[in-house]
Length: 285
Image (cartoon, rainbow, N blue to C red; front, side, top):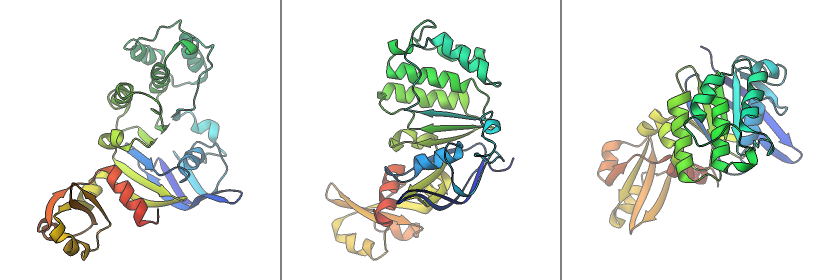
């Protein structure tokens, strides 16, 4: 299968603000991509372009379609969840199921019901009677019951407690994701999605500053915990970033020789959060 998303020279400006600055990236099928960046970096604008919700310059194909010109066709194969996606408070659960069944040709009522049966959500409950976590479960049940090729998640667990967040991502992996589907996630809670990601896209000031796979991250980047007396020697090897913890220094290296690094101290694979902080600072944050 060809790429799910192909962007070339993707541009978007809001008055005096450049939201996307000549961006190139590809998203391959069967991947879970973390689109990570600080507030105002261009994440939401990129998602809106992918979903055909905003105009843009450059070239963008999503599942082989132009999101602006062929959005109605595109939405047959794309689903979207955001923390701002709020169902009408008067709506009952069974009415939400009926509505999605009526408007989406690839919706399976049986799949949605199987997921809802594992929750405490009652068919006759109104949205206003549900907790935020239960509303997220309802959204997920409706989305997972649609046979879509691309799922876009924009801060999907914002405001949920840790139990609901873990349940959300476990359900996503166990009940939805397979090699035929692709997921793009934006979130500030990167520690909670690190274990499910296959790819990383770091974005800052409308530019992609890191585009890599999780396999390449473990091969390319290394953290070393160094005693103070070896800190200057480590700095001579031009680390990407350094921080101090418990009286020792932690240096992050990009592509350095592992044997040389081992002579300085204890080696670790960096977390996505630490890599993100280091990359942002390296690029002028």
